[in-house]
Length: 84
Image (cartoon, rainbow, N blue to C red):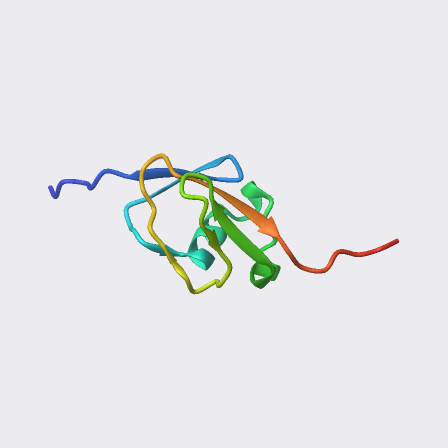
């Protein structure tokens, strides 16, 4: 049996996530968090990702983001919102 690599645990919008890979792209982080973190998977281009620990903002879905155990990310929607 092959040893299992320890998981990197992190959160997106407060929802727990885990991976054994780092870095991940912004899009991968958003897709993995999905609707559990209130992310509309049909509008990923309208989100950016803030890294709470470093204060870095990642706006391009293809940007690679180093992920470390305990990281906290906030996905923020920056697209159009309907007006009544």
